[in-house]
Image (tube, helix red, strand yellow):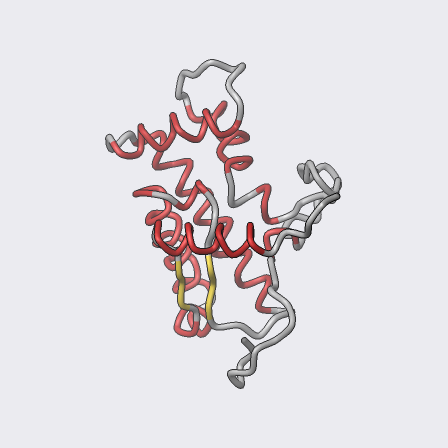
Length: 167
């Protein structure tokens, strides 16, 4: 929906827009593009931040399993897990300001496992703190939404129903 309330023909999934222009920024595993937001707001970010956190974990675990460890620690109030979510929230706050240079938006829909539970709440809170301190006009305008479990299930059902028939 645009700023005039009109339905558009697209959804701007900014997770795949660049936020890090460094030539050695992490590459997106699907597109190969460097510095995409998905590398900074997702389980990929958790996987990159985990080794420096001091949290002991099995290095052979895949990203979803690493995220589960951090989520469980966050549920228990572990300060090391909090620092991981803190970094992701900072990334998000600055990235939303960067996106605002190109897109006129008011609502941010956050999806993905990393936004579940207290960690997701902290990501939003920290990104708001960044925007309030650095970009106060943007902070006043932006509204966040994380779908609840019912909304997620409805979204998955809609996506599944829209898949093309493969013969």
